[in-house]
Length: 451
Image 1 (cartoon, rainbow, N blue to C red):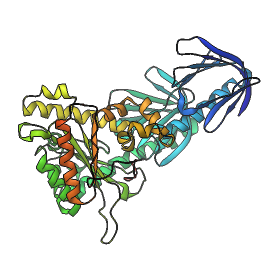
Image 2 (cartoon, helix red, strand yellow):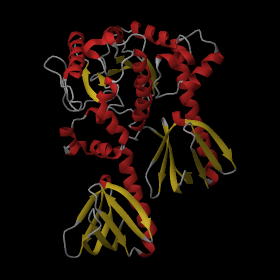
Image 3 (spheres, rainbow, N blue to C red):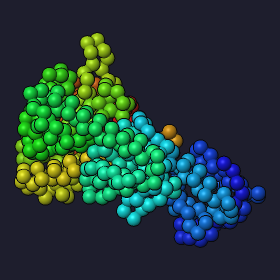
């Protein structure tokens, strides 16, 4: 789309830097303004942090703090706004780590979420509902965060577990299509949970299985105490499965021999490739307490594929164990009793769930170094870091990762990382493996959620 307009470029303090008439082009990768005389301005969509209408002008704020005011669009104002917002949203869906298998799209509606409202497109993905407004920012609602869905005439009310409410109206003839698709997504999530629980506890009765799967939603981890309340025996069932897998069982024994026994946290995740082989379990092992010595103030995250490789089939490449601090050092120093650490672990799991959900369980943007982020090919991660506070929290707590290589080298790397964490005075420093403990280079694929 191309059209002529007037623009005014303002600096971070509001001062006018330049103004002119220009030819504007809405492209797939950027918005370009070409004045009759002067240097063209090419603005990548990922560098636009806000794009909104105001008194028949389009106001654009950039990641550098500048602002563009576009005017004199005439009768093409709405078309331009819609096209620019659509292009920017498509870029943001990938940059903000929202991309996953798409089930339904192109459903137009009115949305209302708190004070925000307007026209939007609704998209149903493998594990989430995405609201794509015409002008405002994207709204991603993971199925795990939905408490209930209600129908009212041609509207759908999505009640959130947080207490909020998303109202979708003016769906017209596509109301049934959307409601059925959303219902299928929620049912699929709960059915997936039932399958996971049934595999771990094959003798569990049907009603207990239904109750457990309603609480143990995909993409959410639970402490040992919470698991015991929700479904007694479930944690033990998971540990039995781990010990039946040669590689995963050996890794589990190493981590629990070094970490806090009896405090394992567990959950499961639907693979974003849509295939069963992409599904996996996640568990956390904390390291704290008087018996931990130099290993305190750390939590290890490990993943276990839902399906072990068949005999003769190669193992998944690039798997790693990720380590995070339980909390900032000053807070940890004040935890004098094991029960205080247990309470802090509950807080960590709640924070971890929220942050990992926000990044859609992608891990590469968490461990990518600042040097990597400066490289052009990691520009989407750089934008995600700038735009997602939850990602910045994860990066701040991240200590390092130990890649699964030879068992002895991996175990040595785990111990090296824990010793580094205990001895390094700089809380912002990240562990880097030595030779033989795994490579720390550029992000590598580790299943669908790695990149």
